[in-house]
Length: 149
Figure 1 (cartoon, rainbow, N blue to C red):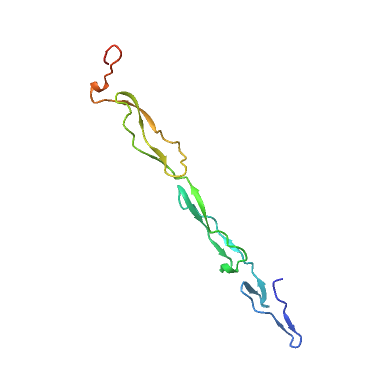
Figure 2: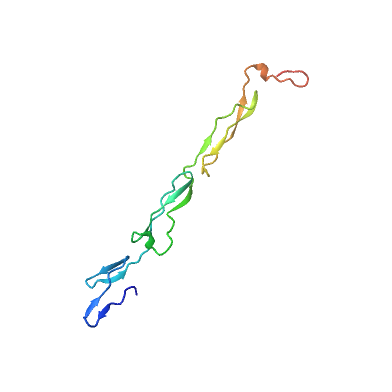
């Protein structure tokens, strides 16, 4: 038991109970010393500090009597790393010029995720195009036999 045996002074007939120690409280008129359970009071984890990428989650951790050194075990962590991807988006560059001067070609662009993971489908990085030269001579083609097109 946590309480000290009272001193029943036979000569005086007086019951003596020592005063409460830190972490104890008095109960009722008899001033019985009762040890309160001292433990860590741990809150819920808060949200990640970022919505796209690596961040930190925090929670409150306090000793139940208000003095950390009174808690008997190692203090639990009050912060931990987290990774959130709900707000990650695709960053898209400008389309290039058409790869062909005349006729069918391809345009390209850079597409990158702005975080560790993007949930939407990746947008296209290539697109068909038709090249349009400034003059007809730039698009003429000479084939075997000397005909121009």
